[in-house]
Image (cartoon, rainbow, N blue to C red):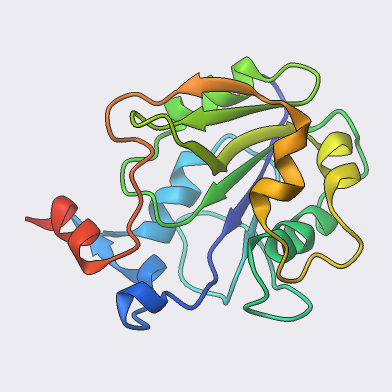
Length: 184
C-alpha cells in the first residue's frame, strides 16, 4: 500500500497496571509507545492520541475532547486530525503492543478491501485496536457523541476481513503479569 495513515491510541487510565503510565514502560530499552510509532514508520501522518512524550519520529499529537472517555472518543480525535480522503487507509493501533512490527501493519493494510481488516489473536479474539480501515468507512461509523461507546459496537457491524496474528504480535500489556512475559 503506497499511502496510509496511523492513529495510535496512547491514553487511558491503566487501571490494571495500578495507574502506571504503561506506554512509557520500556522493554529492551524502548518504550511501548516508541515501538508503536516505529511500527507505523511508513504512515503519513502518524497521529498519536495522548499526552506528549518522546517518540523516535515526527507525529501529530492530539487528545480527546474529554480525556479518558474511551477508545472510540480517542479514535474520533485521531481521525479528526487526518486529511479529507475517504479512500485513505488508516491503521488503528494501541500503544501497548510490545511485539508490533512494520510487517504486521503491512499485512493489515495489504489485506484491506473496501472496508477494513482486523487482526485476530491466536485465541480467536478480534483485536479492534490492531486494524486497518478506509477513512470514509471509519468516519461514517463513528458516532456524533463517541464518549464511553464500546469499540466492538461501533466497528463490529463493518464486517472487516479477519487476518490471523503471527506468533505474539497481538499480545498487549494490560497487567503486571502481561508485562512479566516480555521482561523476564
